[in-house]
Amino acid sequence: MKGFRDFILRGNVIDLAVGVVIGAAFNSVVQALVKDVLTPFIAALVKQPDFSKLQFTLHGSMFLYGDFLNALISFIIIAATIYFFVVLPVNKMILRFKGPAKNPAKPAEEVLLEEIRDLLREKNTK
Image (cartoon, rainbow, N blue to C red; front, top):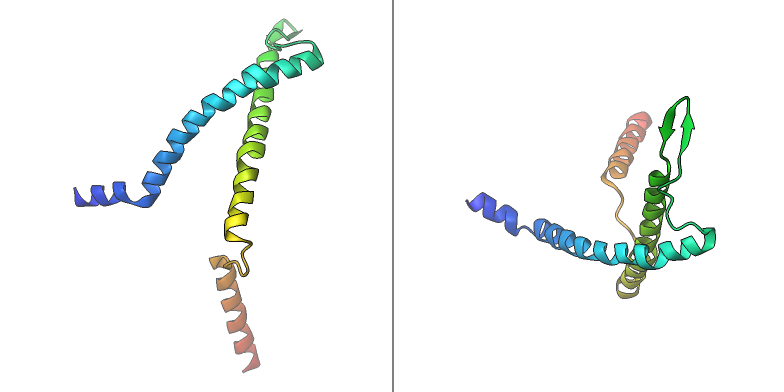
């Protein structure tokens, strides 16, 4: 039980749980924005609020591409909404409080490759 308790109380699990709960709550806000504000605006522009009835027939097979268009438009709107209303403001807030990183840490692979390069140089000079 100690191992399980340590796993559950580790910061990553708690952060993930909080993120999932907040994400689920935020999902309803974004869905409402898309359904009640942005989709009617698009419908006013293209004069068709719902694309689900769009289809075409080819050799007797019916292709219902309207639902796909609805899902694609919804995805693009949701992605843009999250980017412009969450990602950009949070990144600006982080920069404001932390400031730009002066010397960001190099990835471990880059450090390893530099060490190999230095060892090869040393070997060739001997």
